[in-house]
Length: 68
Image 1: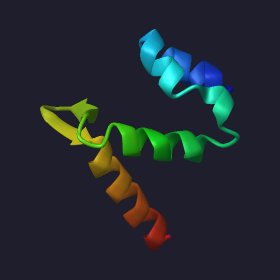
Image 2 (image 1 turned 90 degrees about the horizontal axis):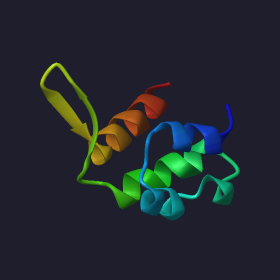
Image 3 (image 1 turned 135 degrees about the horizontal axis):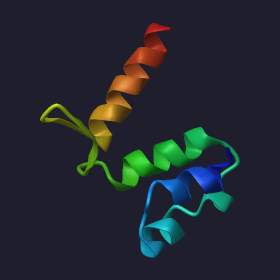
Image 4 (image 1 turned 180 degrees about the horizontal axis):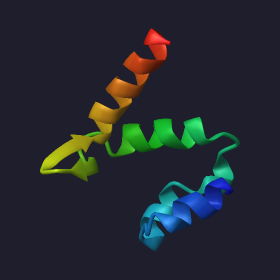
């Protein structure tokens, strides 16, 4: 799966797609980091009545990477 396919499958609006144009990224981590920076306070995941913001996901993923 290419980054373009991944971003399009997330059902972003055309405006959001242009802001995070996957053609500007060589690696998915760059797209992830920019998404976390741009949407810091917005919800990234919701499950079982618990929601994580992009900032929460960024912090947790960095902590997990440091642990590894």
